[in-house]
Length: 147
Image (tube, rainbow, N blue to C red; front, side):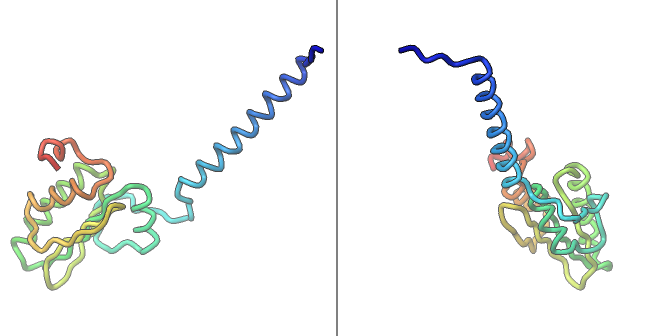
């Protein structure tokens, strides 16, 4: 007893598998892609205000690392630290957002999808070490440093 399957049936089965596969792929992509909820990130990587909680969550979901630098205008060392952070942010503007907030003391909080670190001593080495630990897409220099 031989079972005959027509070409139409074979084509219909192929289309069913294609439709089911594309539907499943769409569902999986939607599950792992952050929803666009009307939240917009600043056009510049260096800003002089704090991000809203929604903007921060959105930035972290897309792999950004956020520097929150508080500093005193009268502090000369703070201006050097600010210059260092701006240089790093410009170098990695696709991955970093620098918030420059005027305050009475100086500190740096680095936040990413991988966690948060607060730096009291803001030196080039300490900032780069923290960046290497926290950035989603590490710079090539991190590999050279062994981090």
